[in-house]
Figure 1 (spheres, rainbow, N blue to C red):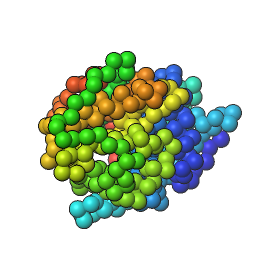
Figure 2 (figure 1 turned 45 degrees about the horizontal axis):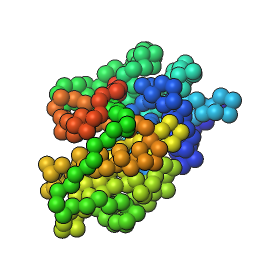
Figure 3 (figure 1 turned 90 degrees about the vertical axis):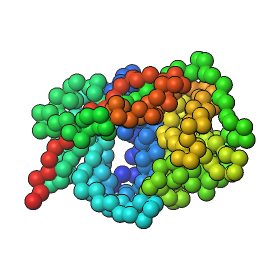
Figure 4 (figure 1 turned 135 degrees about the vertical axis):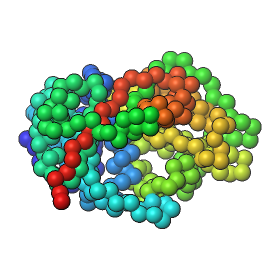
Length: 317
């Protein structure tokens, strides 16, 4: 059974459930933007602004969701610096349960029909050889923009939480949580780290309502002058005993002070106390983007899998 409508919060909860089931058996086949935490983060921060341009289709077997596609269609994006960006292509996030791998052809046909006249991109797991063959058979190839030293492909990093180093902050800095600091501080921390950004107070309210968000696992580092200098949100998957960091960022004026390292170590210790046995975090994997990758490797993460960005040209014009 399948259907096609706008994406809803209930849909995202079903998608997160499929992510948990795939994680339990074949974590290498969870697509990069289809993880438990990434789904919540993407939906929460974007649905109020972009939801009208989001389409989804769900496939069920015996009452269980076994595949889904989430197409993000062309739209106009306004950034925090006042600039406007027109997104002219479509992007697909999707997941297929390994026991129903053949459904990937239906996902592709649906996506092509939904965004037929524009350039179409998709992120598939590089470990999913069957899916990559099927995308190629439908005319999708490697996205040239993802190649080279500054390519935008991402890798997923993982580490266990058996032994986590105690974090150290510079004198006068302290750890806070979003519950303690409040929404305004949490939003400003993100804007400072990622400027220019589309993030707004309304987006954060959406994030807070998602399945998996916990204000006590949304961490901040407060500088002596009161600035929230670094932040990270952790998404705890209690079913699999994993925690995912998304996003992690530091104010440009407070970088190279060890704040990112400290917030990651502090977060992992909190996650372990909450029942997590393993942590994951994604980053850009190309050689020209060493900063975040070096930070994560420095606190014990190692590469686990990566995505394979694919593209097919549009037919408009």
